Amino acid sequence: MSPTAALQRPPASPPLSILMYHQIGRFPRPKAHRALYCDIGRFRSQLRYLKWAGFTVMSLEDAWRCLFQGAPLPARGVVLTVDDGYENFAQHAWPALQEFGFTATVFLVSSLIGKPSAWLKDFDQQPPLMDAATIRRLRREGAHFGSHAVSHPRLSQLAPEQMRAEIFDSKAALEDLLGEDVPDFCYPYGDYNERARDLVQEAGYRTGLTCIRGAANWATNPFEIPRKAISYGDNLIGYAWKLHAKHARKG
Ligand SMILES: [Zn+2]
Figure 1: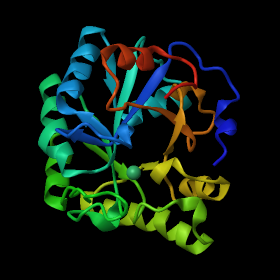
Figure 2: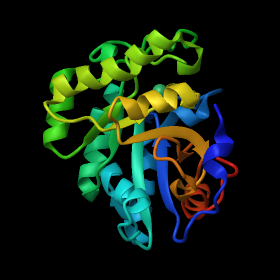
Figure 3: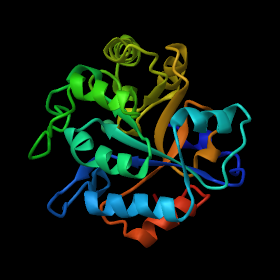
């Protein structure tokens, strides 16, 4: 991937953060891959902080309007994104979000709806992913969904036709599942190259979300939008620091 392309311009003020989560629930303290887990107690504290500090929790569409369509940025804007679509999102994260009246965008792996997270081959478990009925219910309740490709591949390692299928077919499948446009794409592993980026645009998506660290204001291209990963180890101070940071360093 080419992170420098998205980092050539200092962010406008105020910064708009797009936070990245994966699994949210109750876990034994992870020995590795800490950015893939967030304790539900900490998640609730983080939502409470957003409310207390006066943050506007925005949809990705609203953020896109601010970043690329000239809509005014809120003084403190934040978007919550959750990758992969684990069942624990429906079980733990969504009820907490609803309590605070916040929304989030969840990125789904279109061929693994209602199945184990099969790409996590090296993990002890492949935690289950939400099924279609759950996804439709959450959408009715105000959650947003985007595409995380068909099978969660490293896109840059695929042959051109496979890459195209992962990007295009996931959009079609999720639009079929949801009965509406699916305008947002998130690169699995944050892995992409120019070809993948351009295919995301060609497929008709509005955004492409990366794992480049930084405020979303750094994006010069809507298909290379930076995010900030929230890790299992982040206490509230670390969390607040990440939220307020303008710069692309220390994720
Ligand atoms: Zn993922």
